[in-house]
Amino acid sequence: MSIASISFRNRSNTRAKSQKTHSTTFFFGMDIMNEACYDCNSRSSMAYGDIRLGDYWGEKYDTDTKGVSAVVVKTPKGMEIFEAVKNRLNVEEVTLNHILAAQSYGKTHFYNRQRRRFLLQNMSGDSDLKEVYTTYMKMFPLKSRIKKQLKAIVKCCPKSVYFPIKKLIHSI
View 1 (cartoon, rainbow, N blue to C red):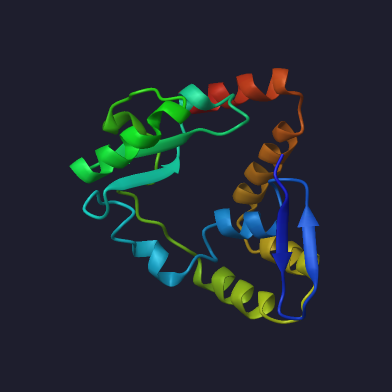
View 2 (cartoon, helix red, strand yellow):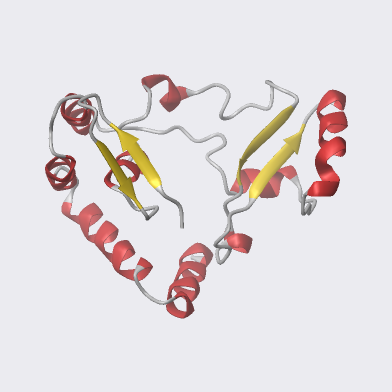
């Protein structure tokens, strides 16, 4: 379990022992990223850098609670660097297509202008984060709110129930 620590301009801090914080909800709701991130040329290109690193999402690692990283080596210099550290890692070779299938590679992310404006205006002041979250969630269509609530309920289930449901959803 990770700890999220967030500092605000008014010098207040909040810490959460959960991956599910209000700020992660805002981020994964796609409405609060930097504007350039919505049409990022680097996200869907292998043209930059010697090595690309990222979280490795996908069906195979649905039940992995520690996290798995994807490493894409693209140049001879990248291979030289990777070979120097490879013996300290648990490495499993997979195809690039396998990695890309579970990423946002090639996808365009959209945001809701009204929700984004609301978040940017209210997160930069002295607003109560819980109130901002409550209002923000009400801005989603009912179907989305129900889906989010069901996901939250399923995440509270024991792993013996949660993981099979997660596997089932990914297989659909």
